Length: 357
Ligand SMILES: NC(=O)C1=CN([C@@H]2O[C@H](COP(=O)(O)OP(=O)(O)OC[C@H]3O[C@@H](n4cnc5c(N)ncnc54)[C@H](O)[C@@H]3O)[C@@H](O)[C@H]2O)C=CC1
Ligand SMILES: CC(C)CC(=O)C(=O)O
Ligand SMILES: [Mg+2]
Image 1 (tube, rainbow, N blue to C red):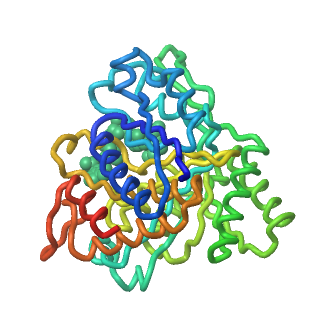
Image 2 (cartoon, rainbow, N blue to C red):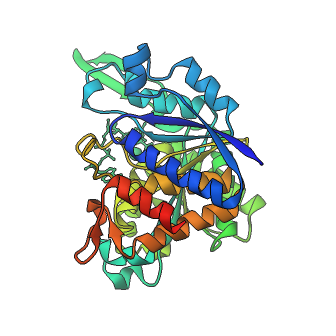
């Protein structure tokens, strides 16, 4: 029997609760579809700082590099808020993405049919279905550019630098075009080319890749401020959005809300190899950690993305997504609760998905 090696980075806040549910679902899928998973755990974020003094121990990088894939909960929380930037839990997350070369972050914002009434958008705006894929550049841009502190006119100042090279833009553009070619054939590149030099290079490079390599894909461009507005006004105009690290971070949180809750949005972080890192789009939600109310579905759906993109267990991936859609007809965690439904805890939601599977 095929055995996959998966590293779990449970992280902080609700991280351990939601990863536990995803592991239950992965195990049930493995049992049903005839493969096995061996798990190892490693430290990332605040829990790593507490145990080792740094947010990303070398042992964590080594374990992830040796695995078939990594499943991550979330990192961060008020306990570590006063720490210097390079020692914050979030620096560990950026570090592992960089160390594994995971430059492409896929964030699908899908409305599961039973959740249409949970979206703040009117049903006539959503239509029959809403399915947007945000392709976010993940190892460059302002999160990875030079940053520091200095004095400006005698006053304390700080700076961060947005920088992109042509090869970095080319490779993420290709991911955007490839994704669009497997979907509706429409790619919208989002930037701030009216202001930023890095965005002008971004726009020019994406246009060239489109013209030379993907002439059949319909390419459009939007400034990020307009895109933020259009996502709420008329989200159906979007098929695939490709954008920079910071713009993708912000736009995907916005897109998550049109699909009901940030607790529903999964992600896949991919690089040159087959192994990836899979995590929900949301953070460690310290405000609800330990209350049993976190929605584990974004993490469960991230596990399904792992099965599809890294382990190539397509049937198992489809089955998990179908089970999630099915359970949403009757059971809801508080973030997506509507009257008449069964209100369930994080753990009960995990159990119910397993039961349907
Ligand atoms: N990938 C990661 O590990 C990320 C970590 N963070 C970190 O997480 C911490 C908290 O950040 P916030 O800005 O509060 O963002 P957050 O995404 O953790 O929470 C925002 C809001 O959404 C709710 N929420 C998030 N996930 C949920 C879920 N699964 N079920 C139900 N409700 C959910 C939270 O309760 C909160 O009200 C910070 O330290 C931040 O830096 C933030 C974003 C991503
Ligand atoms: C380093 C992070 C906390 C960035 C983030 O918010 C994300 O990747 O969604
Ligand atoms: Mg984010």
